[in-house]
Image (cartoon, rainbow, N blue to C red; front, side):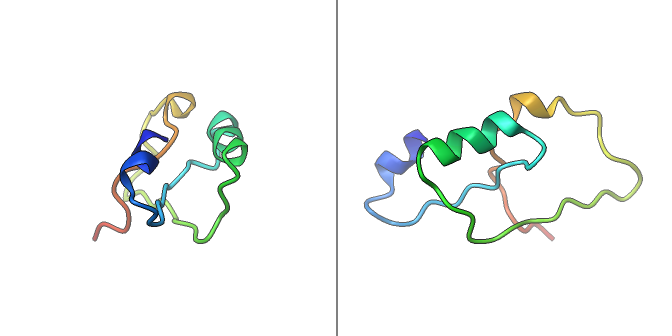
Length: 63
């Protein structure tokens, strides 16, 4: 959320993993709203990731 202090009143977009309820609660607490959604696709299988520690993805729409 510290990024917002550098945004100079510009929009800040965060891709919040929808399987991390704590991350969703955090952005809702700051009254942020959903304006788009990203889809995660894996070529073989979903990676073994502990999603409870990931609150936002920093790179969007690679590829």
